Amino acid sequence: MSGHELHLIDAFTDVAFAGNPAAVILLDGPRSDRWMQQLAREMNQAETAFLTRAQDGFGLRWFTPAVEVDLCGHATLASAHYLWQQQLLHAGETARFQTRSGLLTATLQDGWITLDFPATPPVSSTPPAALLPGLGLSSATVLRSKFDYFVVLEDPATLRRLAPDFNRLAGLDMRGVIVTAPSDQSGADFLSRFFAPAVGVNEDPVTGSAHCALAPYWCARLGRKQLLGYQISPRGGTVRVEDAGERVYLSGKAVTVLKAQLVNGAESST
Image (cartoon, rainbow, N blue to C red; front, side):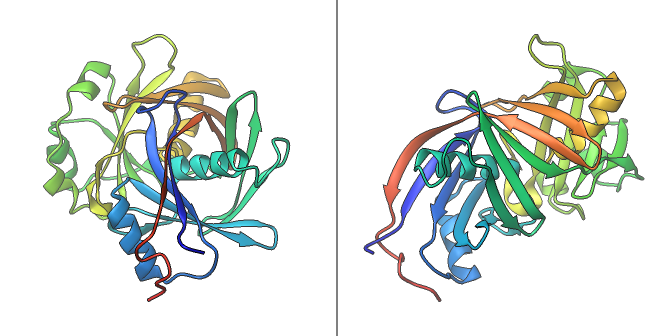
């Protein structure tokens, strides 16, 4: 094999150059953690997804340019899109991924990919001293999910105006910060932004795993089981969510925008 093929896939969007891009690569054998981290840094995307064939589906790992992470929604959606597009799975088959967060699955129906993820509902939390000043806020409701601080605003205009101090946020003891507000735009029930400078991503365009916390919060608050979330980064993206108790269903679309061949470093395993 002369090299691996890399696919750059925009997730949680149905048009190119929107949503959240992830690099996806199917490995033909074991590669070291160091090699995968180097390639993720080279790709310089919010996430690079590494697939390997497994007895029951595929192994899946996610790397930012700086670290490996425990859960990533958009790169999982991109990986599922890759498998169906490359005809490694039939349209009616369920994609099964063995990950650091256990078994994750994805299904395809009417162009929408639905991920079955663990719910990470936010709970009350005392904010660290740097959190609200790092967001440029004097006050807000602060909760905490399994991975992130969870900040609730009541004014969507304030959410849009946020200009965080990423150096301050990088020192927090969590993966990142979810900031959310009610929606003031048609086609969305709630809005969000996500900042994770501690793992090398100042502002993530669309964060599937953040919706594992957003879904239970907003479904409970609005008294509905199914909602549409919109992440208002410059690229923007739509996530359809369903609260299923200990699980959440996250749905979105994806578009492949680039295919490339890895020719140098492809065979290195050290």
